[in-house]
Every structure is written in structure tokens, then in C-alpha cells.
Amino acid sequence: MSGPDPSTATTPAEYVALLRRLKDGSGLTYRQLERRAEERGEVLPKSTVASMLARDTLPRVELVSALLKVCGETDDAAWLRAYERVSGARPVVEDKPRRRWVWPVGAAAAVLVVIAVAVLSAQRSDDEPHAIAARPDPAAPAEGSYRIRAVHSDLCLSEREGSDSGVVYQRNCAQVMPRYSLDRLDDGSYRVRADHPQFGPGCMGVRQASMAVGGTIVDDECGTGNAELFNVESVAPKGFRLRALHSNLCVGISDGEQGEWAGVRQVACESPVSAAVLSFDPVPK
Image 1 (cartoon, rainbow, N blue to C red):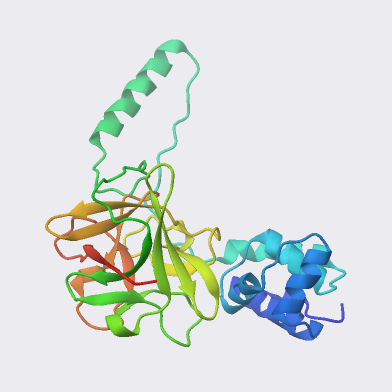
Image 2 (cartoon, rainbow, N blue to C red):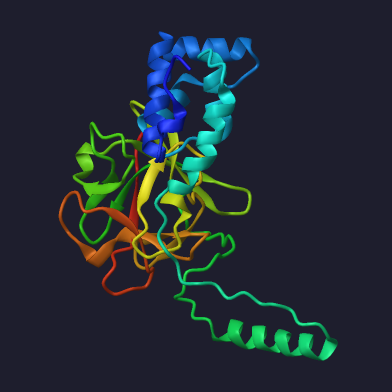
């Protein structure tokens, strides 16, 4: 293999760095990659390639496969084996262990297990992270572009300029980027779209679909494994919560930090020490 050797990658970040070397070695611009992909019946938008190569998390495998083809990589099997191997190297926040039920043989024993499950379900606290359904709120904001402002600090959600991490912070509302917008889905849930001036369109989500309090809120390419669906629910008098459907936790600032560059995290929605009330301030088109 004359180009980068994917077998040397031990983490997602190292794997993506090798993809960058592969792209650079091809001598192709992002626009040329897009055109070459179209000629081969592949879909590889230039903004998507720029975004996936600027991050330190694994892109979707179909994007990797398309990039390998347009860059002229002949040993794509080695790259895909490496992809499968390093995908297990993603940072994982340990969640509370989930109960597993082994169904015994016999009708009487089965009835006892059903009763036990019902009792335990009834005892579960709504504060524990768990998936929820979409719940449309008639008072939720309309679709459109917004500055998303933390009510407790009067600072807005933003990435850092010059950073490719996608991590979201709070900062002065006059300097925020990317541009955020709300998309309402048919079931009444929302996606928060992020239009980055360098990396192009993406989505806000909870990194790695973490179920943990403290999970990092990031902007990334849509559909990359982050939890991107939210209920937007009104909170008196003039605020809203972004409640994640996968966890029943909210987008907010841990411990109610007031300063610029405090990280935006997944927090307990009703916690008195977590700031999870947001304002959606319309941005003119």
C-alpha cells in the first residue's frame, strides 16, 4: 500500500487523519471530489467532505466508502476493516446498567416475570434518563432561523471560531456562529439545524447519543450517530426547553454557569442547579 496505511489507526481521530492524508495525496479539491463522485454514481457533496475531514469522529461508513473510490484507493477492504475496528474506540460514557430478563420455561413463571416487570416499571423515576415520544407543544416557536439564548446568562449558543470540534458553548450573542434554525418534523419533534460558514449544513445533537447527565452538545453532520431529535416545550413566562427524545434530558448549562465559554451539556431538565431554559430570538433572513 503506497498511501496511508489504515491499519495504523487506533482511534477515530487517527482514522480521520489518515483519510485527510488520502484526500491530500489525491491532489483533488473538494469540488473535484464531488464531481468525480457524481460521475461514479456516488453522492459526496463538497461541504460534507469538508465537514467529515475536519472532525475527530468517524463519518458514516458509506461516506468513507465513496471517498475511497473517488480518491482511487484500491484496497478499500483494508480501510473498512480498520473502520470496524476503531469504531469500538469511540469514547463511551458508562450508563447505569440495564436490567436483562431471562424468561424461564413455564406459564406460571412467565406470569411472575410479567408482574415483576410491571412493578419495576411503575417504580422508575421520571428523572432517570429514558427515551420519550414526541410531544407537540402549540406554543413552540415556528420553523425558522434563531439565536438560541440561555435565559439565565443572556448568552447564546455558539461554536468556537477556528475550532473543528463542533462543541457548543455559550458566548456573547453578537458573535455567535453557526446560524441555527428549527425544523419541525411530522410528529411534532424538532431538529436544530446548524449552518456553519466553513463546514456547511449540519445538526445539533448529544454526542454519541449519550444517556448521561453531562453529555456534550455538539454540531456535526446530520445522521452521524448523535441524538438530534428534541421536543421544544414552553416554560413560563417566556422560555423553552429542548428536551432530547432519546434521554428525556435537556440542553442546558451545568450548574448554571454564567460566564462565556461555559460548555453546553445535557442536563436534568427540572434541576434547580442546571440552566435549561432557552429563548429563541428570531434572526432576519
